[in-house]
Image 1 (cartoon, rainbow, N blue to C red):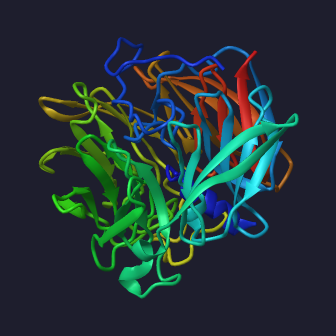
Image 2: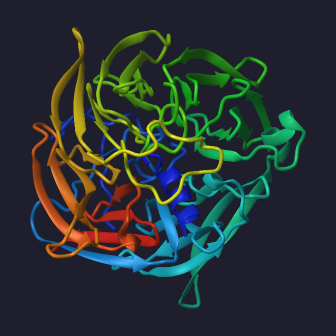
Length: 476
């Protein structure tokens, strides 16, 4: 979330069960998972990036390299956030194309069709993008009125309903620093390991709602900085990437937010084509072969290639860095001591968010590519690169050792001056980088996955948001 799936959704709108128990560090086909946050829904399906730590890894096997069925659901909305609770019911937070307001859909797990929906108040573009499921299967997000919502669902008289179960007004903590009103807005929310609901704003305020008291508190991280990605939480604290620096934030002895450390990065001379803001495109990723959170990773915006930056979570000291791809809007996948970075350089978004600024260069060809980097005693070591044209934030399955994404291929038909794009379900071997399968699932603008994230459910179904709806891809 784009990796910024979230952003991708925003861009879009601008342009027009069986549950498994998985323990941290358990044996798996690839790597390990970070610790489960007890205040979230199931590991792998409770957040846009899978978990509180934004690993973009899942304990569930994907649809695989065999035959799959792909069904597209047109919803007249871009759907960057598709989650699934312990009750097995998929939920999608989408941005309507017609007015760019958020809308929640409850989906039928058997076919992906909407069973019920709920319109929310319009706020900032990212306000209707980032959300999570709590441990009661409620979607938690902030709407345009500055209210933190817990959205439930139920079946009554044979019909499903989506409804607001509770709300807390956090408007003062969100915009009090700049005079109130709509001078600022929430861009992302996430629960910490103590149950507080943390948020970051467009203008780099960070704070939390204490559910025990109903009181919200916040601080401004850096004047002139912006937050354009989701935030991540771990036992060590809350990680936030701004357009200038990576922060680790926690609560001080007085119960107020405090910055534990700040590490600036090279934000480059300007936004690159294929990015939606000037700065890092990465939601911070916690990872590590031990606790699963000993490291934090982001990408910078250096020229000619962005660097993968790895930090010690406790101290903020840089562990290592290495050049990877020309540019990216996506968060790294993190599992064990491995990271995977997908290029979005030159991705042809139909529009960019207001205030994104011009890119340098103005245009570039989307050439794709994914890089795997392992963190070892010798530093950051590139293990493989490939030329996958990933058009979505990839998801790693630690159960089957595969990376799942959607690729975009531009085709010029023989004897025609028209250019068409095909979107293909793709499976990549995480150990080698080899592209093992690609299958066309769509070939029109409505199938554009806009660098949005896919979510894999326990029954091996992949849900993938697009510009106007979502795909449901399942093994045959």
